[in-house]
Image (tube, rainbow, N blue to C red):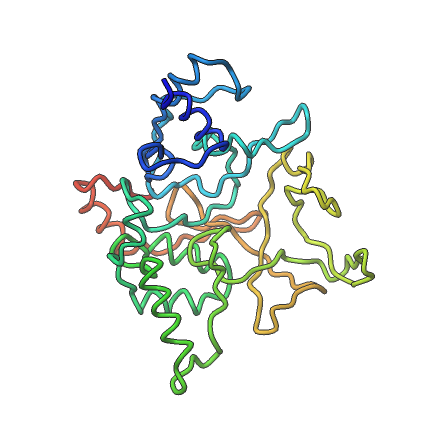
Length: 299
């Protein structure tokens, strides 16, 4: 009885979990069953205010619907971030896909930091040379796999420290400014919103900056990060640019970016621009061969 009571407090964030209280469904890729917790929850009361499914719908690994936005309550005009882990993979989807990562079904945090996934230098170089988010996504979708990637955090961090410690042989264009938290997608570099240099504004410190071209999920100038109803009404693509060596983009830098098609190996534009087919790569064949290993390929 005590453990059942603790499970509710742990899973709702009031207590730190012991080893046997960690829900594998929250930390294991492709495993979203929360049955035991939900049985205990039902025995107590509805403390969430929303329905948590015991068996969530199947989804691809890697997730072809990535990235997801936070759940949005249109009635109360607020984010409901607290139910994001429980609502996945049914959370809203952004129209422009990115690559979530090369890890496969059943991988968990312990495996990912176990020094088991070697860094691929060819992949690192190709992604370092990417000039735009589209180039990054295209390369990842068509080349990155569980066998060929940046490496696990241990190996990739080791490579970066080795690179930073070198006196000779530095990269011609300087070190790559990686976006290490990958909040937009796997192997992204430091980015900013694509900005309109003709839409100049000033912040509360009288610092001049150019407004983003995209309609953003958060209301502009709202320190609380309140959701922007206009964005969630249409969910138009979020236009991004990579930062250069200066790491500054306040006064605007605009590049018309396309999206990578989730459904086919082709690009499609976020505007009315012609469709351009892309080359298929050997990764398709690799994925076909890997189906026996319970890996879902990206179609």
